[in-house]
Amino acid sequence: MSYNEIRDLIGSAGTKLKIPKEKIAQISEPKRVIETSFPVKMENGKTRVFKGYRVQHNDARGPYKGGIRYHEKVDLDEVKVLAALMSLKTAVIGIPFGGSKGGVEVDPRTLSQKELKRLTEGFAKSIFESIGEQKDVPAPDVNTNPKIMKWFRAEYEKLTGQNAPGVITGKAYRDGGIKVRDEATGLGGAAVVEQITKTILKQKPEETTVAIQGFGNVGNHLAHHLSHMKFKIIAIADIDGGIMHEDGLDYHATYKQRSKGEKLPSLCFCSIHGPSKDCCEVSPVKILEEKVDILIPAAVGDQITKANANKIKAKVIVEMANHPVDAEAEKILKTKGISIVPDILSNAGGVLASYLEWRENVGGVKLEYEEAKTYLIRKMKKATSEVEKMALDEKVSLREAAYLIAIKRIAKAL
Image (cartoon, rainbow, N blue to C red; front, side, top):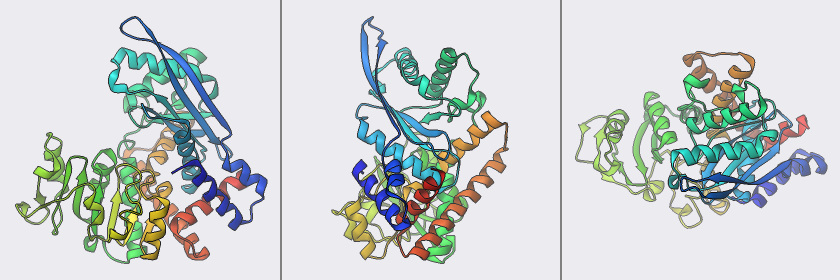
């Protein structure tokens, strides 16, 4: 997705809502773009200069909120897109945050732990004046983790002289994080799936077949919660390949073996028959074309394009990855009557958990683990119902409905 596509979607929603052009112009462009270069002393004694970005899109509804990624292909346009999507995501699910995103152009695999720590400290030093508990709250993203967040927070506190646990979310539990954080995106997605199964498919979970592309943190936790909700997961695939059984897969047995280092194609545990020889291998590309009620792309973006859109047989697609269905494919899928639950709704569980962590750190509002899970599920289902109602009232797709809700809320705050 390009930033021009984001502008078009925001502009279209603004026109439909009859929002003044000057407000739409404000929402369409980032409020602040920070580009920074900073030096890092390497293990060999030489100094290397790295390039970093922080895009603060919109803070009308609350502090900016968004992750920091370390990747060799990070660029400004990508960070701008992700910052805008975060503004929309926080508005759709109704939490008092805006949207931001950050990144550093680096392959972290090429750095030692000491170099990685110095890189994090250098990036924090270059942007610390623009962030804060009530300004902009970063979090982990691609190739970053709770340890890196701890380093970032420590450098921020050293520079400001403040104790600021809420300046970062996604922290380890012992450092002020919350227990629900790791599973939050998958849990939120499962809540959305349960809701749309009831309202769109009008059937029970045990009657509903599911295929999941991606078995990392999001796909794994999603499959875990869907299996407990009694959904029939018939196929799972990741970068190494995948497995499929028409009677359903035993998630727990599959995960147990996967956690021992085995690849998915070598595993087959049927939910009815136990260890089974009747599994089929399925590639991460072909899994998208399987005949299921619900298809969940939970890996990377741009997986469904005009090249394979006509081969999609699912009734509903739930976007757990960021932008897995491109614009041309979406037009084709619409003519086929396939509903798409957009990423700004379905994968918002992560930022919702970040809000709970921030609220606990800054305001002292603490929820126990089961309370946090209940809150997250209820909030995700409520947001899904609101998007469905908007789609019905305005006779638009679920994606268009999500944008209408988000833009309306941001414009009101402005």
